[in-house]
Image 1 (tube, protein in one colour):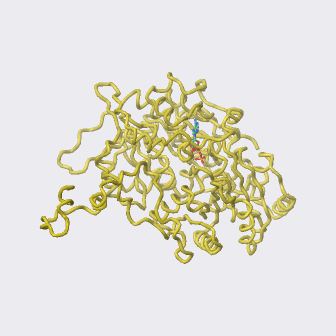
Image 2 (cartoon, helix red, strand yellow; image 1 turned 180 degrees about the vertical axis):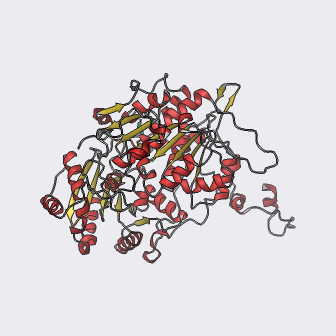
Image 3 (cartoon, helix red, strand yellow; image 1 turned 180 degrees about the horizontal axis):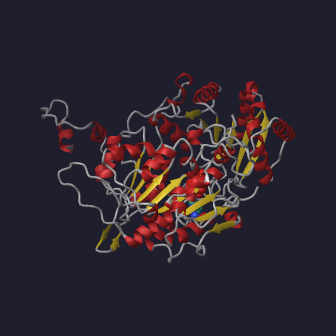
Length: 591
Ligand SMILES: Nc1ncnc2c1ncn2[C@@H]1O[C@H](COP(=O)(O)OP(=O)(O)OP(=O)(O)O)[C@@H](O)[C@H]1O
């Protein structure tokens, strides 16, 4: 190729031109350009946005041309041979991609208050609850996983990890509730991977040679409610499965299914999935759940509420997944409304219930403020807040939550018109736009992101120092998740919420949360609470947006819940729990 280029001088006879694929042309022109290292290279053009083109301008139209072809890169996975785990050799480039340089804030985000997690009271209820681990050690953790944990530079397990590792390791089902940003992802990934590394894969049925595309049989299935969260879990799984026989894969809607199919063909032992696309692949015969040993519902209360429950039932009970007796089911969230706890019993057996702090409580690392703002003045109050918060050279990001997709666009355009670098994420944007918005926010090109509920749960974005509830949600648990995008992994954060007469439905829950977290309660909130009580305020503010009726914490709204269970609905085989579901103390802490 090089000799052809040198022949290509003026006057020389042109040799017959060979076709060069577009992604290699730039390499031909400038062979001296070194390949870019790492996936996190800056996105060109991110600053070239114009207000009229909103937050999607400046999108790179193709990947940087200096990247080497993908096929050259070894996948970094090991194998299981004759009962022995054989890890792949180390791959420095992949390690840099997965774990970053020491001190890379995008790869390690532990903050100064990390050690304070140890002071949070933990309650573990059920039969034969094992002792928690204190450190990352072998036993019980597989040495290969310990190595990957070291690469990730985690030194101490968080409380939820301390308990979940031995509980899941001894084969129990688990319902775990721990505050936002306290390491629940590791809480399920560590024990699952550790057990997989120790025990190897389950035998899969022989492939049908007549079929071009193979069916995959994952050992672990992790379901989560949003595409971005599913992707994030997959990225974490790739870190901790590095060099092992366990191949993580991911499926979610909005992205081309052909690419996801090809990825599945390369192997799928631990599958992170959004329910819709998973059902699609099951229907197309691409995925079988017959080998699932571990089923995880992350954000389990959301996965079992009205929007997702039918799909979850179909996946868990209507396909070929092993029965509740033959698999381990693990539910994780920061909030668990009472009716969802009851519903969850259908999917569990003899579970251990773990709560780190009170169920549904907020992290103490978050300072919470509530400001009175009428709807018409919210924009100017927001500008004032941003002006005070965004120091010129700081790395700070601010996440602004609104209730509607339309409002997300309107507010984003307003910020852009005020020369603030903002983007927006919501369900009406296509997946490419959503991912681009999230990436530019993460990288700091757009330090402001306006979001609807799609960004409320699970997303772990470094440097989010402020969350603004421009519109408060009508459900107090949604509030807990939203503000939980800041103050994560021991970092401190600030949440400011705009409150007015339209938010009376959440006032009781809000006051309780603030009181419990020892935050200041403004007088207007106390007055609104009285007003809400006179006019029949809705307990803890549950039941607004998604038709969930009962209060999670004993506020007792009496609004009809689609999930209210009668005694007879517990006659399923999975009802053999060690707890009394009738008892009000059933792993709900008294508020
Ligand atoms: N043992 C650990 N040591 C240091 N950092 C950790 C540890 N475990 C997790 N983290 C970091 O803490 C952050 C939050 O973890 P994670 O996203 O799992 O929280 P979460 O509890 O699932 O939050 P949410 O409720 O919002 O979903 C991540 O950046 C993760 O890398």
